[in-house]
Image (tube, rainbow, N blue to C red; front, side, top):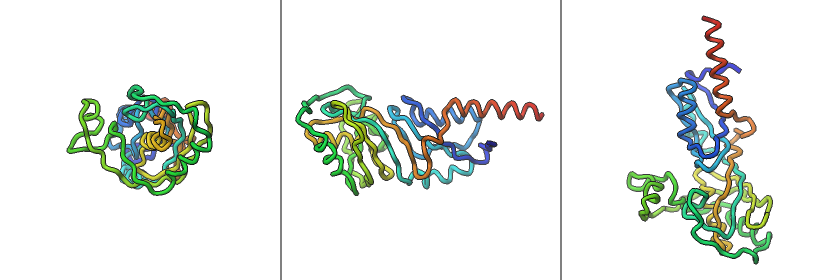
Length: 231
């Protein structure tokens, strides 16, 4: 496939675990030597999966792509609460979950399906008085997180192994899966945190069609070789 990154491309990337979305943009920008590039929807460092990058003229489509429906799979660990709602921070509270049944868990998940009010995690990129919420949280400062309206189209429990439950979520833009995991734990009365997350789809764009960082590097090498042979 012939790419023209300077003119404009929509790139589907499989974001590596622990990388920030900005890390991916920076790496791809430096690899491709492209000036105009941005991503359509942040993924947390501890999440992996589909991250869409737009270059050139397609940066105008970022808002349109970000607004599309998202699909995620992952795991939630019940009975353990963390301040960040995921594995970024250590477990702060543990509770017994032995009384919970699979029916209890799915019923609690079902209660979130529809249009709901959700409070973002304090460890998030939400702006509060000109500062990122996670910067305030890491300094131990209090911050009031305002609820936002999101839509959960599906919240299916796909497997249960002890305290770890696997799930699939289809949701609207702006949904925090970490908050969903936390709120599920609160609903069940035992607490919970998000222990793994993969974004599998944004609108019609699917993770199975995504490139890796290594693929991008290989594409660049091939372009340079082709240009060299044509010079």
